[in-house]
Image 1 (cartoon, protein in one colour):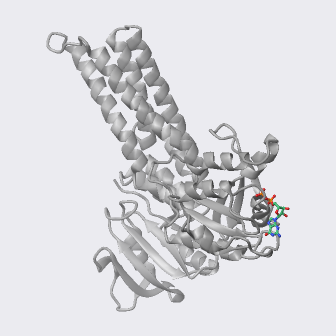
Image 2 (cartoon, rainbow, N blue to C red; image 1 turned 135 degrees about the vertical axis):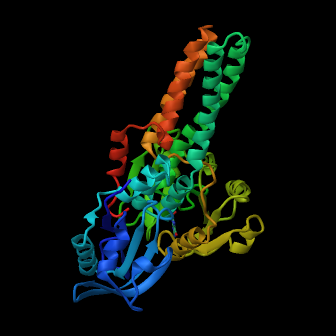
Image 3 (cartoon, rainbow, N blue to C red; image 1 turned 180 degrees about the vertical axis):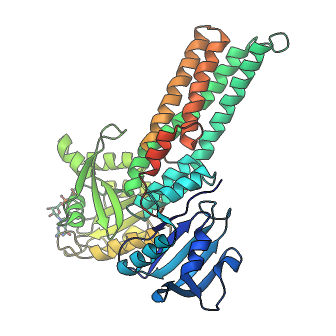
Length: 457
Ligand code: GDP
C-alpha cells in the first residue's frame, strides 16, 4: 500500500543546537534527493540504509542550511516506512525554512502524533506503547520519563497480554466443549475456571493498585521529611518551598488522604508528604509526627531526616535511625547556626548516610541539599522500584472494566449458571484488556489517542 509522505519538525520549536526535520513515507527519499546536495556529489537514494550524510539543503540555487541527513529505509525505522531525518541548525527560522522546502517538494505537514500513529498502524508498537510516547513527550521531568519509558518497553503490555492469553485459552476451551460435548467434558470445569479467574483478577488488581502510585510517581519523587518534634521539619519545608508557594495537592481518593507539597528543584520534582501538617491538624502533639512519617516511609523513594543538632539525640532519633538504615536517606544536621550539642560523628555510629549541615532558619546549606538530591537522581541512586505503573486513565478504566467482567464470571460460577454464560463475560474482559494493547480498538479511539501527540512525533 502506498502512503503519502509526511514531514514535521521533530524537535522543540526553540533555539537549540540542532533541529530535526523528520520525513516519512514512500516519497521521503525522493523528496530529499531533490533538495539535498551531498558534499561528495552523490545522491541520497543511492546510499545504503542507516547511513548519515553531510551536505546542504537547497531550494534550486538558494542554500538554506548546512545539514546532516540520516537515511532509514523501511521497515527499519520508527514508522516502518522510508524515513529521512534532516539535522539542521536549531533556530526556529531555519527549521521552518527547511520544513517549508520539504513540503514544497512533495511532502505534506504531519498531523499531531501522525508518526507514532503510523508506527502503531504498521505494527511497530502497540497502543500502550504509543500512549507512553505521549507521556514521554509530556513528561515534566526525568523521573516521569523513567516511568513512561518502562511502559514503552512494554512491561504493561506484557502483563496485560499474559492475562489475556489465559482468558483466551479458557474461552476457546468452553467453546470447543460446547461444540463437541461428546469428547470434551465440562465436568468439574467451573471449579478450575474459578481458580483461573481468581488468578487473573489478582493480576489485574495488582496493576490497578499500582495505578495510584503511578499517578504520583509520574509527577515526581515521593519524599518524606522525618525528624523528632521541633527538629525543624516545617521550617525546612517552608524554606524549600520558598517564594514559589507549593502546589498543595490533595490526593483524595487514593489510599492516603494527606497533603503533598510539590517542590521543583531545577526540574526535578519532589513530592514531599507533609507529615508536619498532619501533626498540626490532628492536634495530637509530639510523637505522632514520627509515627505518621513511618507509615509513609514504605512508599517513599527518599527520606530526609532532620536532626536538631542543638539538642542531644533522643529516643525518637534512635528509632528513626533504625528505620532509615536500609533506605535512601539524607541526614540534615539542622540548626547549624546554634552551638552544636550533637555532631555528625555521633550520628554516623548509628546511621551511615550522606550528611549535610544546614540551618533551616538562616537558609544555609539548602543548595548543597538540592545538589545532593539531583546527584542521587542522576547517578540512579534514587529510583523507582520495578513495578509496572499505569499512568494513563484509559488503561485504568479498561482494567476496571475487565475486573468487573471477571467478577460476573465468578458470580455465574457461584450461581451454577450454564457454561456459555461464562464465555460472554470472559470475552468482555478479554476485549477490555485488548483495548490497552490496541487489539480490537475502534478507529475513533485510535484517532483520539494520536491527536493528543505533539507535532513531529
Ligand atoms: P518541626 O516540629 O520539626 O516541624 O520543627 P519546626 O520547623 O516547627 O521548628 C521548631 C523550632 O525550631 C521553631 O521555633 C523554629 O524556628 C526553630 N528552628 C528550625 N530550624 C532552625 C534552625 O536552623 N536554626 C534555629 N536557630 N532554629 C530553628
